[in-house]
Length: 259
Image (cartoon, rainbow, N blue to C red; front, side):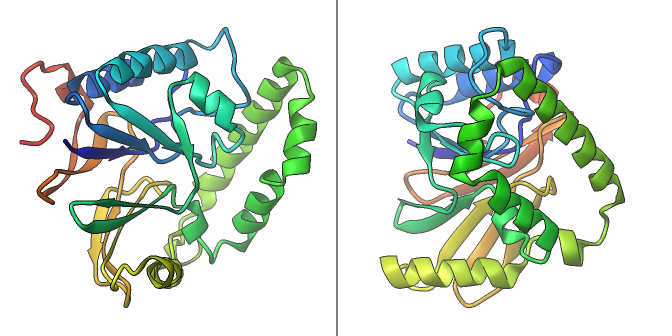
């Protein structure tokens, strides 16, 4: 069976094409496959919401996948960092740490959303530490759901404005040296033998890099879902598949994800 990794779907009630695409992707997985969603599954998440059709669809689709022996795991992104372990479980997901090390076919694989790799963006890293403060999160969760929705919507609008002006990849992009340092720590603790494969998202730029440091042999960057979707996969025999395709492809019943 294969391990599949996707990221940055940004599902919401207002994205029916993405919801349909997510359903199509999950339905095309084979019985017994494993799925890792590494951040930003939702456009924003401020708690379980019975009126949120995107959440309902995810829970339904992943429940059906579980019946086929498909295990689904989740790493929180910057848009759904508030998700708790129990909330993830309600959606059919097993919550993992950001910086998650798995092994498949003898290959050590580091999975992460990717925002922790943007270490030159000091403003964002400060924001990351703030919003991940457990005490502040507890206070936020005490607010009524409709207030949390309004706050999240306002933050998203501010983020859009800020992103429009952010163009310098030296500041806002990932820092390979930082990734290599994290990889070194993992290899020291887990005997990876300097051969780590890294898969992440966050920056929305489908791309591949090799031998950027002493401990990372290859780095795969997943793109955001929109008119296109991307995925990374590895089979039992170690074959890696890394593709970006038109979202409309998921409507083709004869599509083989591993072709």
